Amino acid sequence: MAAVEKRSVTIRGHRTSFSLEQPFYDDLVTIAAQRSISLAALVADIDETRTRDANLSSALRLYVLAWAKRGGKSP
Image: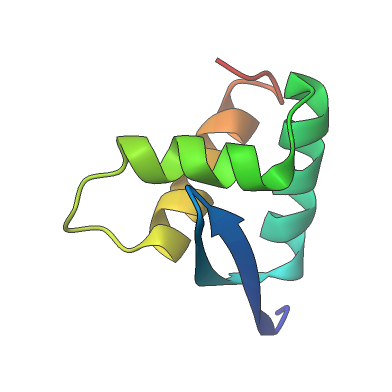
């Protein structure tokens, strides 16, 4: 199993961090590239739509899972 790595990104003018395994991070980078946006913009989009009872790292994992279930296609 891949180790969890902590990463930081600036969204809406403030730094925030999330912890993900490398495969999830790699898929987020791929999704951002598919959408022609920065990783920070993708994280901000996911952050805006997540429920407030879910932490950002979990929301990112669930987003990648949904993307994978759609066959690697963004909504």
